[in-house]
Length: 216
Image (cartoon, rainbow, N blue to C red; front, side, top):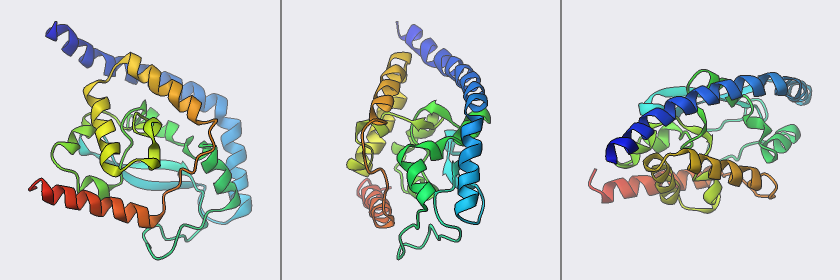
């Protein structure tokens, strides 16, 4: 029985990757007009690049650039914790509707992400994970995942990581279907998914404290 379970865990990620690649290409073709309109709106409202790139931690700890439509004003310093992000009008809309994440279809095609999986954390978070918490990078990170549909920014950073670990340890087709259903459901809810820079720093400090407490 254990052999069958291990075989399923080995085969399913391969099938999932293949299906994800095909779906990403199809969606990219279908959504290309919408992405073009968003690009024009971004350029019309403010100067600067259309896409926002940020380094994230992928499968097995590999660093990659995640793509999003730029939602902030040009020159906004994402590292300055004394100043909150300056979001544009177009940016506020595409964030609220999650349209800012459409360029991540390119990440999926490149094999850096999947539709479903643990959310790819920024490097500052990953560097403060315990050895056990780093197990979450055994699979491809996803655009949506168990942590995102289980409270998102309403739950603590440690709970988010625990949800990621739960997904990695129980990855299956049924679980992915459940996450897809909950993701679609959450799109109709008006939630504030933005995190302040202060909150991000607090979460990183909480991870540092937890790591020290675990003696690592």
